[in-house]
Image 1: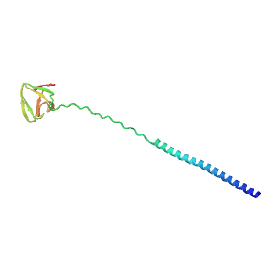
Image 2 (image 1 turned 180 degrees about the vertical axis):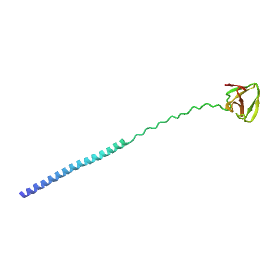
Image 3 (image 1 turned 90 degrees about the vertical axis):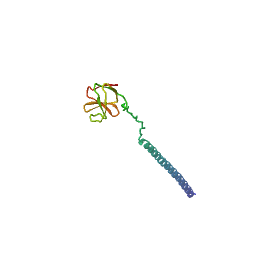
Image 4 (image 1 turned 120 degrees about the vertical axis):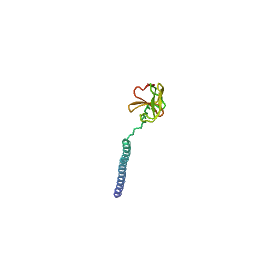
Length: 147
């Protein structure tokens, strides 16, 4: 009987060893699994944190106001800027503000004309009294009155 007891004791010891071995193996696997799972979770969290930390914020574009310059008033071809009164002698009217311009007509002494434009050329001040009609002033040939 003692032999049977040894076998029974030996079998019981083997069962205990097996159970203990399974318990240790389970504990190791649980610990390792927790560590692996934790590493995986931390890796994901770090990856997410890295992704959001490395994202470069971009500024929201704002509209740049467009500056529209105020137009400078221009004198149209038909805007009256003054009046001339011819002196005591008639004056030749030229097609351009130049003494070499074609002779168009003459203006009579003491007559008045509306002026649409002035310029200086060849030592004279020229007054445009109509389209392609320029009257020169040599200094005392006429009187100009600006509006």
